[in-house]
Length: 569
Image 1: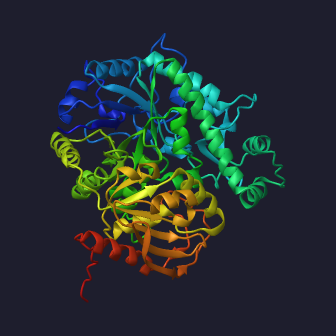
Image 2 (image 1 turned 90 degrees about the vertical axis):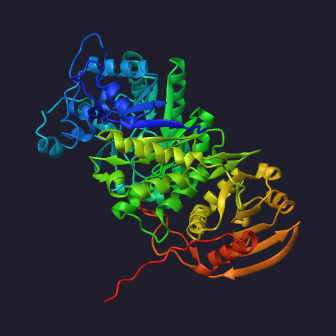
Image 3 (image 1 turned 180 degrees about the vertical axis):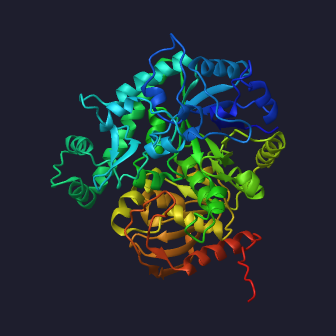
């Protein structure tokens, strides 16, 4: 029996408020299944900011009726929705057994876009509170909310936001909130902002660090140059405080929470680049993550910056998130189409969409038994898809989850202490991260399908691979070398920060190759976008070939190598 959760992320334009049931029955007939949950994307945060109550009806702004107020999809023009109609839609979806969440982004519509769409100028809460907009490190303001800031009266924005959020959920009848872009994680990496006086003062108060400088750019330079680790930990703490308060408030009204991961980043880069600590979030009470992994979109749009296929990178990311938060549920965000962002994988690369889901759904995290890293899929976005299109998507999902797990050939070992050591060391040596190494091994078709925490060694019966053994505590490495159920490969940085590759059997070293040369970092390690890879000192190609050849001999695995075609003349 196929058992996984199906979710849909959709805008109001996907429904029809000219129908008595708002087109819900027709929509669900079209999908061919009843999803566990639907998240309504209402885009601008003013939906929360400006909410009072539902004692009287009123029109919703255009930018809440469609993502970016886009004027139409393939089915209909953008409709004018009222507050009562939205409440009716939620009630209708719930009557079919669907859980209904909603999401907003941190974005504010720009004036030029409003004029392009010929929309009326509306008064919004944010117009009177520009103090919560991002201040970038060069002093410029961005039309994005920074949720960790204080309002001009000295109160925290988060307290205002959470009070309004709970009112919205109660008044409309939502099951809960979908934390998405800008709230579940910062819009900007922590080395880009927010560097307003407010955030710098909060940092100084929190860490006891005085930050001197003539202007924003000078102060940001001091923080990033002298206090980068403290700044990362400060942003993580503010992010955690926001969500600790939110989770507490949602529990009090019996509301749920689903939570996007940070810009396709694994636990290492989520914290280093965005100050998001998945493990600490689960301790706060976040237990369902929507994993951003738009591999097909990145490849289709030509955004991939490396020779490693994006699906290999994102599969590595999924495995590492799951083992970092083993008790949390991961739902794969399956990016199918987005009319505002101008991509349609279903139309342009359907087989890539299918193969991506197939691979990502079939990697495992082991405790006593193998468990799929992902427990379900969320379609993004779910409007304007034909019945044949939904049928194709649904079969692709079912096929991906219908495969029985096979015994892993190679199991990666994870440790929370290793994670902390790797993060701390990166600030000084800029090594190739274990995430980058695992992604590279995927691209070389090393048969890794499983990851396990070090305390689950006793349940394994495979080859185990320890990446960067020198960053594991000594007692954990001794535990690894006591493993007797198969060979042990130690590959990566040793205690002297040299790249080595060793094989142990029954506690005895049988093979060693070391002193692999490295390619030094070519640029500063501050990527401008989530699409840019984290720069690192990379080991020579023979290091990866060595691991590939060793595992190939041990497993006798059949490899299918990608070959670049060349056109004549």
